[in-house]
Structures are given as C-alpha cells and as structure tokens.
Image (cartoon, rainbow, N blue to C red; front, side):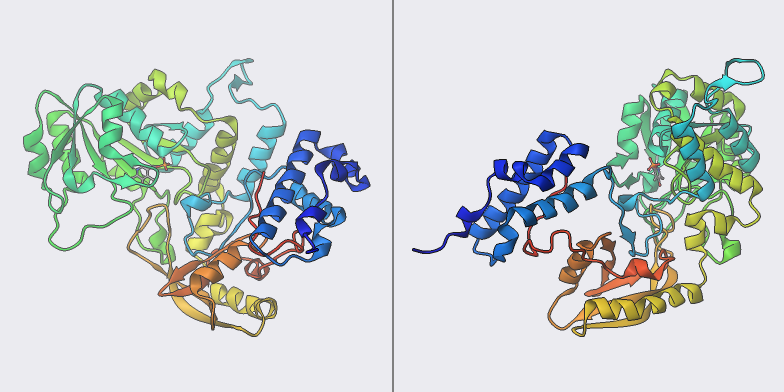
Amino acid sequence: MAHDPLRELPAVSRLLAHPRTERLLVRFNREYVVQGCRDILDELRSALSEGHAIDPSALEAESILAALESRIGEAHGVALQRVVNATGTVLHTNLGRALLPEAAVEAVLRAATQPVDLEYDLSRGERGKREQAIEELLVEITGAEAATVVNNNAAAVLLALNTLADGKEVIVSRGELIEIGGAFRIPEIMTRSGAILKEVGTTNRTHPADYESAISERTGLLLKVHTSNYRIVGFVAEAGLPDLVAIGRKHQIPVMEDLGSGALIDLTQYGVPKEPVVAERIAFGADIVTFSGDKVLGGPQAGLVVGTAALVNQISRNPLHRAVRCGKLTIAALEATLRLYRESANITNDIPALKAFTRPLADIEATARRALPALKKVLGPDFCLSVQDATSQMGSGALPTDEIPTKVIVVEHDRLGPNRIAERFRQARPPIIGRIHNERFLLDARTIFDPDDLVPNWGDGARDLPERLPLRRH
Ligand SMILES: *Cc1c(COP(=O)(O)O)cnc(C)c1O
C-alpha cells in the first residue's frame, strides 16, 4: 500500500498533550496555541497535497511544536515588525516615515510609563493646556505669532479650511490641486471642510491676476499648496507666496500655505536641494502655514499649524480640534524633537532623518563596502555583488525630482530575476527592503548605519517547512 504522509500528521489533541506545549501555555492562552497548531497543520496538509517533498521529520509533533514556538514567540508583542530600509527613500511612508531622535524616544518612554503634566499646570496646581510647550517652541523656531498641533497634516489642512472658510470660497491654482498617497486630495478635503473650491489659472500657468480677478464677497481664503510630490516643468508660471500675500492684504483676505513637508532649517547649507523653510514662508507674510511632523522635520506623525495669533486661536477653538488632537506620546516626541532644533549643537547628527539626508557619500560607500564580505558569504557564489553610484530620494513627497547621490550594492544572479531576489530579501528576518531599478535589485546604503543590517538572516525557526510555505502571522 502507498505510504500516505498526510495520515502521519499528529492531531491537535496530541500536540496539546505534548510536554513542549506546557511551556507555551504558561505564556499564551489555550485558544491562541490551538489556533497556531491548526495553522501549521493546515499549511503542511496543503503543501503535501500540492505534492511538495517534505522531510518526514517535519511532520513529527516535536518539529511542529518547534516551528510553532518560533512563530508564536516572534509574533508575540510585535504588531509592527522591524524591517531594514535599504530603499534609499529616507522618509518612506510605507515604512513609517521619520525615525525618532533618541531624545524623543526617551520622552515617549517617560510619557508612556509615568504620569506626566500633560494638561496640568504645576505652578498653579490646576488644569493646564495640553500643547503649550510645543506651541511656544514652534513660535520660537518659525517666527510665527502662534501655533497649534493636531494629529497629522491632513487634519491640519481640514481643520484650517473648516475654521477659515466654511461656506466660503477658497481660491487655488489648478496647478496645485494635489493628490498625495492615501487618497488625500485637495478638492475632496475642501468639500469635507465645508469650503467651496474656486480654481483659477491652468495646470501649467497661473498668474497673480488670476487670483485677484476671482476675488468676490464670497472669498474666504487664498490657498497655496506645495506641489510636494510632482513638478510641472516647461512652459510654466506660478504666483509666488509674496504675490498672494500682496493680493490678500489689499483685499483683506487671509493667505494659507499647505507646505506638506515643511523644513525647519535650510538644508542647502548641507548640500541638500532646497525644500521650503517654514520660517521663510512666515517671513513672506503667510497668515497660516501647515506642515507634517514626520516628514523633513524628522519627528512623530503630527500636523503643525503656525500663523497669526488671531487665526491660530480660531483654529484652536474649533470644536473639530478636539477630534483631531494629538495623544501624549506624540506630544512627548514632538516636544523633544523641536527642542533639538532650538538647542542641539549638532542637529544633523541628532535627528536621524537629517542625518540620512546629509550623510557624506564616502560614509555611505564605506558602509556598503563593509557589508560586502558577509553578504557574499551568506548569498554564495551564484550571486554577483558590486558597489555602484545611484541616487536616493527624500521621500514623503519632499523634493520629488531632486535626487541625492548615493552608493548602492547591486545584487545580481544568473537565473533569479530582480523580483525574485527582492522577494528573498523580504523573507529575511528582519526583512530587508531594497529597490529595483533598471531590472536590477539594489540595496541603498544611505539609511544603513550598521553594515550587518544588509546581510540577510533567513533564520531557522521554520527550517523544516518548505520554502514557499506562507508563514502566516498572528
Ligand atoms: C504630506 C502632505 C500632506 C499630508 O500630510 P500628512 O502629515 O501625511 O497627513 C498634505 N499636504 C501636502 C502638500 C503634503 O505634502
């Protein structure tokens, strides 16, 4: 009679009765362990029925429980899995944008584990204001009269439009009707805010006179949007912020700018292409400027609003502000990050995003070269590795067309295409995310500070399971 490996799979009850399971049941509840056993048995069953060759020892209770232990232990407490960002995109939205400065991490830990004076005035022993310290720092750093903070920049834009232009027209250039990732579109946000979009100009050319001739008694706001994730080039004209400010003053209409990734310092001094600086936009006379906390600023996800005291106060008092306010962890991280802008002796070292943007090419190359020997060893002789010139991106819409010179490790293989190589690197623990450019798989060393991070570890937790088995996570 033909031997049927399916019949050799242990039953769940046998796995549960196994002494190895006892240890798991000290930490994990029974339903969770049972589900884990079922998942692995299901995976083995479907692998067998698809005809995969599986080592008979992998079907034994001992191996199944070993696989379960490594899987369950790994998933335990890790809702967000660590990955290695070798994409070269410093602020990768899909990988969580900015990494926090050390000081911010400490502040988050403090606020997470101890009571803090979040809304408590220590001198008077009464209720205090939640965002006070952040507002003071933002005022100091940007030169604006007042500031407030909400959950993200999308919320900041929504809240500002609702406060300043509910039921009124907002004049925007047709060249600035942006969509950014996650379905944030200016026309749609405008509708939800209660404001009425009044488009002027054309996709490629908008003149100051276009704004001025659209002004009527219905106008509530002139809006400028930083086209952060694309550029219109060629036969183009754009009304600058100073033009809009002049028109706004003449007609007594406020001017708002959505900067997206507003920089707090001018990065051109470090050889990085120009990204608009918030203080400069305030100096140009913008009444309100909104920007993100986790883009070029390099802090936690947040939406920052700076501007005139009168308008910022209206925005802070809008009941919607309460619905989009920041949690204490954000406030802790943001305050610590902003303090660095005021106090740090070496800002491009203390803020990881700035460190990655301004990193010397020789340093990036040294990291790539140091990773080569171990990488060669792990990958074996079928792979061909070389360090080459390439360009990295700031990401999150900042400087979409200006690329920054970098060094990459090109990973090639005789038979495996770049997609297959990328997939193998994603299967490492932690997963290594590179990028594919011109049909080649690249590991960009710009955001890698420890060469070992570029060396994949394929682990051995599920060694006995076939390679293609989908390792489901709980
Ligand atoms: C990124 C961006 C936003 C949205 O900011 P979030 O902080 O991601 O909500 C809005 N407007 C512009 C111009 C942006 O670049």
